[in-house]
Length: 94
Image (cartoon, rainbow, N blue to C red; front, side, top):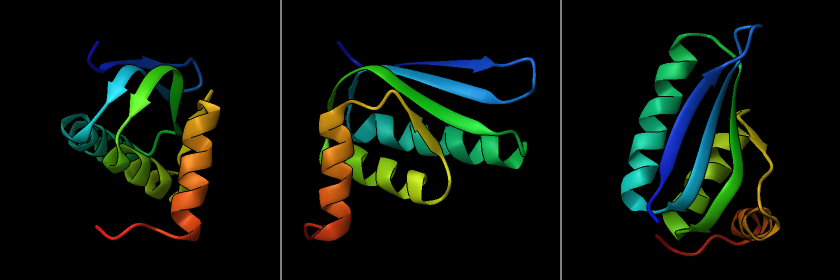
């Protein structure tokens, strides 16, 4: 399964982007563009990762940077959270 991305707008104007499947390098670029576009709209933004099954190193780094910039990661799988934490502590060379 490849990555599937769905965008929902709540009644309060906040935006939730639901991501499912695998997130790899090509998906990371699309997600970055989507997040930048949403920031321009000034809406509160969150990524719901409930159905994410596999992520690449690029995806982990992008998610970590986005989280550090204030993006909420909802329902993030434990292994992804752990990987983000480890990457912050001692990043691998790019």
